[in-house]
Image 1: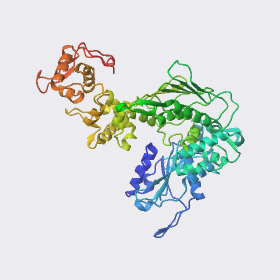
Image 2: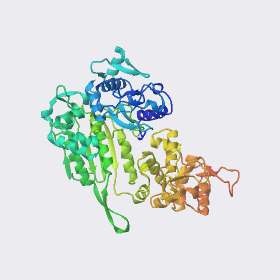
Image 3: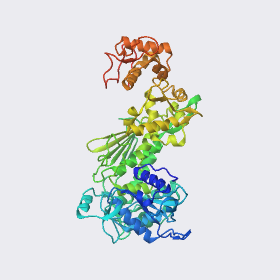
Image 4: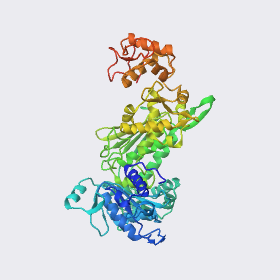
Length: 601
């Protein structure tokens, strides 16, 4: 396949396609979340294949039924253009179906309307396929004229009354419900914003969508019911002018916390798209900074990376509780952006997994519309983007917390940290897009070493996944053949920055080439992580000379923080372990050795 898919459904489909191409029968690799479908307009005629059409109603109806089966279970992917009775390259018959037509036809053929993603992919032999990606529904769906079915194993079977009741109890998507509002209530300014957003993507399908007539555009986005002409709640939020006495977004700009307000955008009765457009424009104006660069020059850039700021607001819009009257508050305080969203984390999400969990959106229909507009990431990686964009400029990652009735996201920006941008500018495009590598860099900016055990909670992944991330980072080169990270040269487990990376970052690293006394708290950290420490570790991690390393260890031993753990007490092979005065777990912050020097961890 030519694309890299990130979420588990896409990853399963990618692996299955490779397995079928290698010789396994397609039907034998189908699962509860994966199905193979033929394009019924393409048929084998001996040694040739009939030309398929860009639209084919029987195939669309078959796929609408399959999509409902997935939505009524755990979601899944239907691959179009594969004969499930065949194996190897012969199974890949391909398809010429138009993805946008198919997506809209599935929406029309399902009750209630089901929004799916339809993506063009390629098999290993170059055959064009389509992937119909379906999320788990929060209400039961059925194809027109059909019965309610769900996916059980590799089969689509009719739901029992118990199955249906259990599904209905899952959740009702407030944003998908129809309102009394009609096209006459639509704000023409919101349509203009939508077209601008679609054209700015420069995707052919989105640009074509922007050119459709007004009502057709709204129907294609799924927010205007084609049968009775009423807007969904998501459509009314995004596009309609209302008589409400509240705004959707409340933007406040101050030069610093507690200062007088410079800009306030809190005008009720307008469409959400228009409000969002104005807020984003105001952030862009206030966000520009003139900052010093090397050689006395000055540069212009964003204090807060624009993609990170956008994702913080978009995530709040998609996941907030819209049944509550409060607005989303956006406080732009100096170089800090604080977005507070009414409601709580989506089901299955908490502070410890917010970076990695593909959640069920609180408002699935609204999220689908935002993705269709390309305001939101199609693969639900918006939080990843916030983390990556902040770290690449030397800023700390987003701080995302939950209170009793709101979710708060804080982005703290400022001038780019030049040693960090010097390093990240040398990374390959793949590495710059890899949030795991960004987090490895973030960890090593303040700590001399990292291993999978330390890294796993930071990545919010397993130790096996953390080890793979470290392997990817180790393969990444900077400045020609220099390595971004390298193994500890003393034979210890774990990794540190490579020599070239440390030279670039020397002014930013609090542990590298610092006075020996300032390295002491980092020595304590090494013992905490490794269990012991040698003089060679200090030379390797901190750039100390041999005599300096020995002196630091001796002083820490004299203070009681360390004790000799080896049989030998002098010379090669001596190592140190925790001593009687070793700082207790959780007390490293602010720990001060009696020999002087204080470090904040």
